[in-house]
Length: 207
Image (tube, rainbow, N blue to C red; front, top):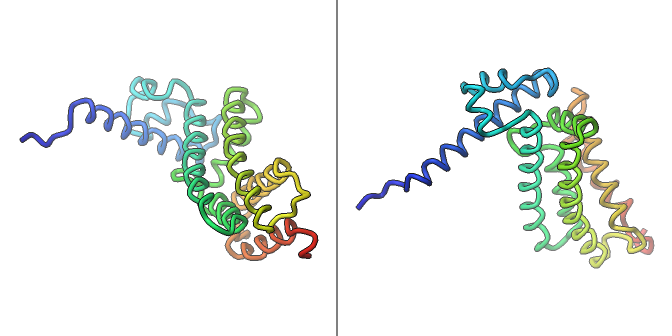
């Protein structure tokens, strides 16, 4: 009996492996030199691949950024889908915030996320993908916030859309602080940040 993978499966795996290799190479280049100072040839060289082969997977530098945003979205949504089945929805929100700030999806890091935010502010195509991802991710956050209101963990007078924007602004700000301030330790301050968020969201009758 032949236990080898069908040829198509092998080709798909090779394609996925090459794509992953290129993404990791691009991340190293972007983190080292910034998005605009990094060229396609440099990424190909970093990956040990020809530029022609690179273009089969990624037609432009923008495509790398879009792929990273989409990958971050997939991983974050997987976490949120699981968390929505749990009790203590506000606790799960705080866990997700901690994960987003401390552990961006590999091979991303905090510095590269700042690069992506900056590029989204300049580049219409990247901005569109980023904003669409933001809407999808905040929708899951709003579901958790609605559950937290039902559990009397969040004041029902708050608008969940506004809360989701506020919490994502906190995440982006903490990622920026982590990326730019070598003396800042999110883990050191995490427990107090969590207390501040819980206190800010607590229903008025419980304050």
